[in-house]
Length: 209
Image 1 (cartoon, rainbow, N blue to C red):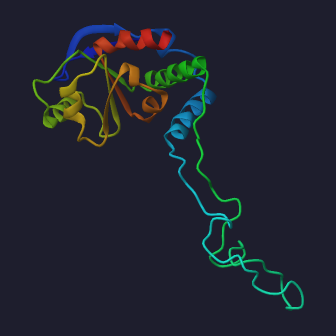
Image 2: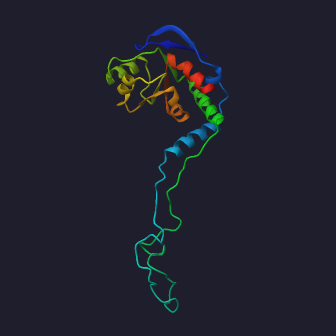
Image 3: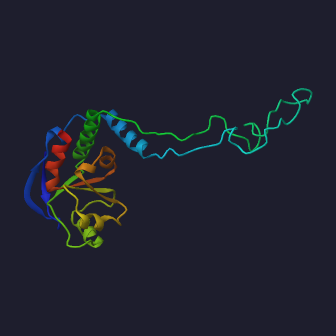
């Protein structure tokens, strides 16, 4: 697949760049996409939820009444789960939700996500650029020049660029990542994927490794 290369003014430079079929034109696998997104969301969970069981609730352990002859159900102490203010049965406890995926599974998921974006014509290539100073209005002008929709935009850099990152930091629908930070969830969450010209080769090298 060939894409035109644009400059920061939104003008077609006349150059074309070829996207590797081994990364941007594979047979998409929806199941591995689901696994990769599930892993990403699971790894973000803190897992610090906790409720008190009957042994942890503050209260007397004295038996409330006689075992028989009361005319009702038998009761233990006031910390019983059936009592108001008692402990909870099988409540949540701190746990680790993270799990691992095979490297080949994660690689296929990233390629499948990029393939879907390529099929939807949601990938745009812009020549390498930088800002002299962090200015949000310069980044907003870039978005308008490239005629990108006012939805989630992910800009992929070949290497860290502090001025570009700071210029986009205050924009709620823009995310700036490097090639090494690009994962399945980030790709799938983007409505438009903007690749710097120098990052295309890096993406292909990393995702084919």
